[in-house]
Length: 149
Image 1 (cartoon, rainbow, N blue to C red):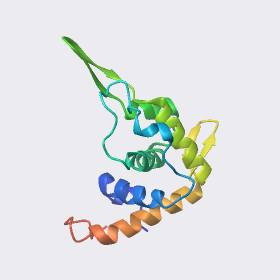
Image 2 (image 1 turned 180 degrees about the vertical axis):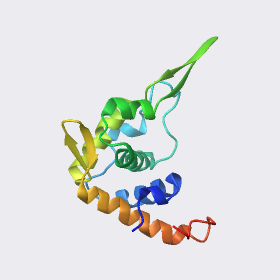
Image 3 (image 1 turned 60 degrees about the horizontal axis):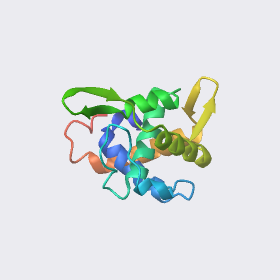
């Protein structure tokens, strides 16, 4: 069976985001069109579907790194802040974006909250592995060497 590790992350996240858009449990909050994804950013995302891509990316990150918490995911989605004439400095990503996306993934049944942190539920594992399997069929022709897996 194809898993998350067999597909390039950018391809998988696009496919999972497309599947998450079809679900009722994952929806873009009203404030998402105006919010930045972190203090290190100067503008909000231009892509209208960025919320689904971030939720898909968080689901993949929990699958690969789990159990994880919001703080650890904030560090993953952080970046360098431009401080003018002073040197750039690392800043974590938005906690609210990460937390709300995780809460929506929990409501959809894809993520579970344990005492050690959030982990992918069996339903979430089946969902993302199923998307990975479908994605592999469409990607095999474009990426040489992937067919051997």
